[in-house]
Amino acid sequence: MILAAGLTPAWQQLLVFDALRLGEVNRASEVHWFASGKVFNVAVALRHLGARSLALALLGGSTGVKIDEDLTRLGVEHRSAWAKSPTRICTTLIERASGVVTELVENGAPVGDEEVAAFAREYEDLARRANVVVFSGSLPAGAPRTLYHDLMARTSCRVILDIRGPELLDALPLKPLVVKPNREELQRTLGRELATDGALRDAIEETHRLGAEWVVISQGKRALWVSGGGRLHRLRPPEVPTVNPIGCGDCMAAGIGWGLDQGMDVLDAVRLGMGAAAQNAATLLTSRLDPATVRGLAARVVEEP
Image (cartoon, rainbow, N blue to C red; front, side, top):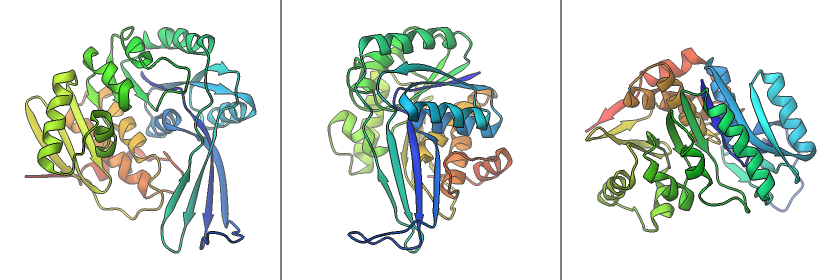
């Protein structure tokens, strides 16, 4: 079973416009509401891929109830720790004429010690049943920066970290199997520019020294860097028409977890994750994946010199 865990989900509004003009009245041609945030993007992707999975998040208020109802409708198995404040709302604006996607992100509400403790209790119970755990998303204000480290210390299975910043640095000494920031997130985590390939290689080596077994660095449509087992790989993703890129990194994490749960080695699981990210980019609603399509796209991933 794959456990997707995170503390900053969102109730997502997606608005599609034929053309979008700032400072004017804009009427959407399509409106969609759905459970989102990194943890639920991973969970919904896993459900569509047919993986044995379960999601754990912190929910609150009427928006938390709507997320719970949406996940139930989708057949996503999930457990929740309940917070005092409502779950945040995030909004995606898509302009068809230009293909430009704009994301309006509300920060998660601060949490208290009781809410963090309730989440940790639920996690400890679920982690015993997991073969793979995917931690994703930032920590809300009020949560200790060592929380992911503390949860990993109670975890005996393989761990994928799709996190960044101090919480990533704190967790690395526990030797996660896969660390998956994008290039910008790794740059912010290490506090220095990674403008050249040489600088990126040095940063990947440092991430290994700090504890990561495999390091996966995405760069949008550009080649993805994968390092582990003493080798460095650059994988070029398949070309697809971009409809909505939001959640591609989350779908990649889900695809990697799906591959590992099926017994794949890490590099092949990463290829599967790249196929999941590519299909997500070509789809309007986040994480609505098809297993056959994902495998077909994964087969089109090319390794570069």
